[in-house]
Image (cartoon, rainbow, N blue to C red; front, side, top):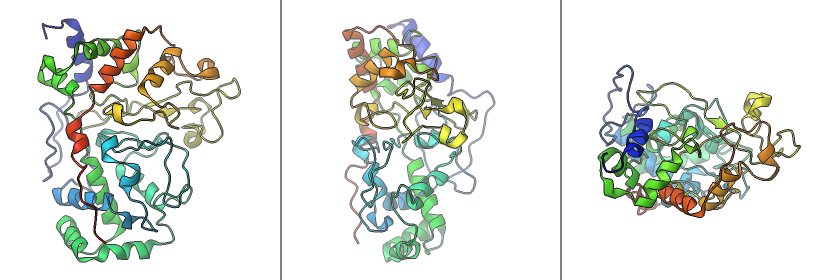
Length: 371
């Protein structure tokens, strides 16, 4: 602490504010070991789907299995690839039929802590709810199970799956309820807290971050740059809930990406949260994603329209893009700022310090499922 003075002290105070409970909450008993670093809270888990190791193992097998798509071409991992922090390097996703989607595939890192799922839906609050969309949605089609329910389910009557289902649910019979719960358990297990930043901020390893990254961290948490207002807390997003924090901070923001009518409108192809709430003030609002492993989850924004971290920082420095700079519905934190080249480089190095290579490598060699 003494070596770097107030910067580390103030930053750690901001980050630790969501780690300390006002009232202690006892997490539900489960057999699953989260292996969280000391002081980090356990995610909230639905009472009807407690975490178990067997469910995570089954869910992982299902996640990488193309049999879960109607035409056996696509798995969950097709759009959520481990080496890209469970996102993919495409502007927007492509479903099992080849249909192009309108939104970028989000990273699944620490999704267990998200209070809201997807880019712009205030009503999707559990992973179990969200998983139903890629499985059964008809517009856009992702896995395309609708209309092929029996055909797809029969694929999971194989012997090796029967044992996995029995281990997870004490019943070898496959069902969509079990598949959803197992997938949710695996996705919930994808926690990442072993980056150089974590070593520096939470383990007092002053040498874990470079001097440039430390300077970038000071800029990130400054009132001039204001990054931390939307990307705060230990998960670098407002969309966080856990055993010590149950308050929904409504993490949706208009960043001035568009302003097609000079009155704040976004393109009709995707207008964000307003499509769900029908509230005019929610035009162009999207959820602020976590910045953990952001180095490898390009491209950025809901439509993948910013290709690099350099582009992202230039975008925020300008206070938006094009006519979006004058968007009347834009977040008050998006005022823009003067940025020197050295400062941009320092910011990028700080963002790179959030990369957890141990997490990224943990599933790279996962064996394909044999059919």
